View (cartoon, helix red, strand yellow):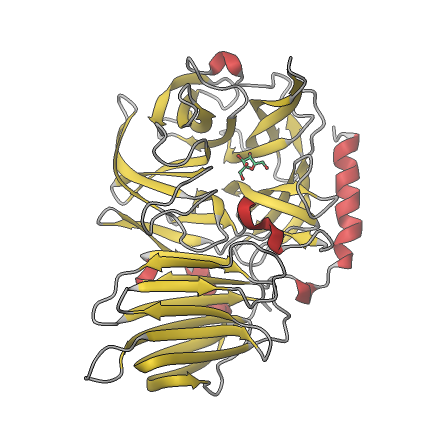
Length: 496
Ligand code: FRU
């Protein structure tokens, strides 16, 4: 039975999405149907389609009582909206249906697991959010919340675990047909820990152990965990709050963390070996993965960050888009990301140049546009010394530009959207240390109307940024202080 709250949200989204014209949305990134979007939820493959749900407040372009929006796709790039899947309509989720995940049950139904939020007045007069884990079951469009909800609450926490920071369940089906689930929690030391739960059927869950504790090393609370095996290693993804930077790794505020190690399935022991940021740009948070039918591990993130949401003004009809889906791999203890191969089907109008000499600013015939896939190989253009700086500028006209620049002496790649049209005092730049020998660098830049995702050295690092520059600014130029020799292959990306 659909509740009144959900019926209203469904009616509202259907009526108001018409106010947003197609050109004012990204071409092949999922954006919110109307209003506000944050984390990807329930990323799954079910009945022949990819399902991607998201944190959703349809009624304004800022955060509010969370619903789950819903999209489906066959290629991860063309998305069709389905009616909102969940609304905050029960006593245990009255103040929000927070992030969670989806699996297919043995009987063919789809199970969603999410965090129910209930605000409770404390003795000091303040409000605290009680967070519990809840499930809903459905057919890929309509979902019924389980009468036994919540399925996990404070009784299922380890000693010292906070009932106010207990969220974002990510489930998976285990080889023996039972289910596993990781949930973010705040431990007794005030920082994050990831709890492991198991279930025979997806409805009845029991606490197994603390899979890993932060011990105040990487930020504080850990949100949105994901845990999976990849290329012979185990990978734990999480989004820590209140991060401190460590050299060029991580950045202040809401960050992303990837831990790579080994996992003993007998004793449920995760041994961490390597750590790194997941994304080195500005707008990326709360990623979640799916295993595709052909065995790829694909990750998608919210292409926005709580600290820089101000890039969108409250007057906008939509705020929030997802990143490009990215194929993951682990090579020598490092997480690599590449745009999903399905993107290649969107390529049109190839333009290619070999050994272009760049010195000062140049433009190249055929290289412009806001939806593009560009592969660049750069190297020093002269034998007498390294160039000082190389830059690609895009979304450019007389007034605007976003620049990606590389200084080989420091091996630092910088993204800068200060001149992208933003009128807010938020972070506009980020620097990343990249691997380069003798001034050589390989970049793949994916532009889609309001974003740029930069894949460095075949996916060794990625920098994601949004820029809401006037779409008339579609120039692309290249700049070198010194001499750079460049190969470039560029395609237009067209979702038609
Ligand atoms: C992460 C997060 C989650 C929570 C959701 C609420 O961005 O804070 O921890 O479930 O957003 O919308």
